[in-house]
Length: 222
Image 1: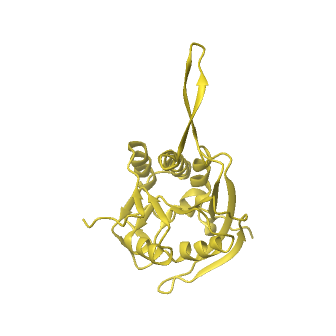
Image 2: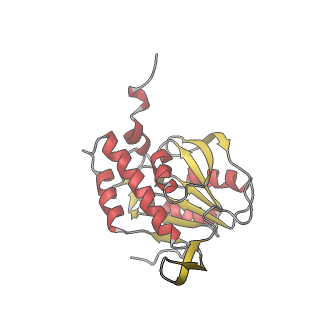
Image 3: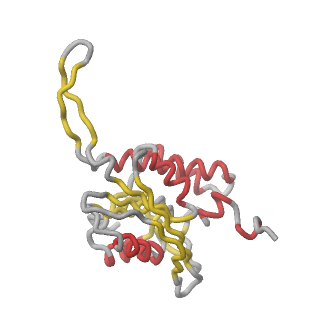
């Protein structure tokens, strides 16, 4: 296997691998799937926090003086939620970043072969040079959607770090993201081997939005 680009981190914590297996399983019901995505988000946040700087400070226990630590820049995080499958994923991220500001984007990827992306709702706070922006979408497939979202994000300012965080990815999408945003970082749980003709990751986990919330066709109100 070829070495991964330096911008890419694959997080293989045992809990993540276990929850990813639940999410992949076609027999997992809607609640099981959604909880698995939530737990993956939470543990991805734990692992990402390893990259943040620690500051030492003097403190006292009931018995003596000692050294304490605080995580810096934890309050300089902006999470961009990509509707709709990212909702439980972002809920997991919030567990470690409860003070994170939130941007919301609604984006729809059209059918093959063009995979044209329609971005129809954008609400992102202003971004400063001290911010870490985490674009959260469970699936990094063709990269088309995340490239359009990344462009929208950078219109609001240039952050200190631009991070794309996903549950699954494929190399074709990773390479396109890196080409478009050379300074960006990519965090994912696994890199699957291919996309099918419809642009779905294989073996993947199916349509993450439908598996979280149900198929729109089955829930249409007439």
